[in-house]
Length: 124
Image 1 (cartoon, rainbow, N blue to C red):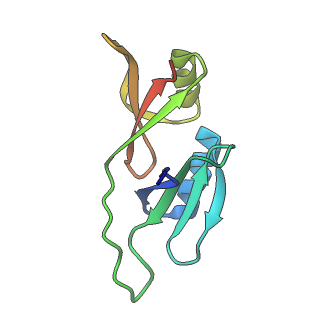
Image 2 (image 1 turned 45 degrees about the horizontal axis):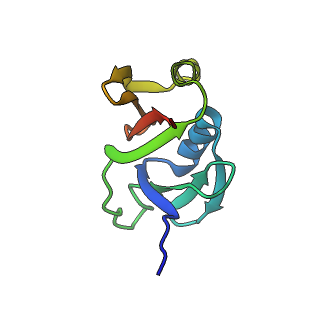
């Protein structure tokens, strides 16, 4: 049996507002939208998706158990790394760890508007 990941859940307070941020700042697009509490965004290929899961629930419903924070999700770029980080800063992305050179290569971490943290590294 072969498996592949389709989406990774990320807790957000407002899925539509979050989707706009992911589209505007990271260049993702909305792939699926559910009326209940989630939607997915992903890269232009559609092979990578973030499942933006809205916490708080609807009026009269118990909110789903989700936690905002360190997602452990790693994003890579083929663009020159420090230039891409600078471009994201100009777009309003807040870095929790600015780009830094490690013995094994470059790494940084950034936050989405809900405080979810993403690792960001060059592809090679």
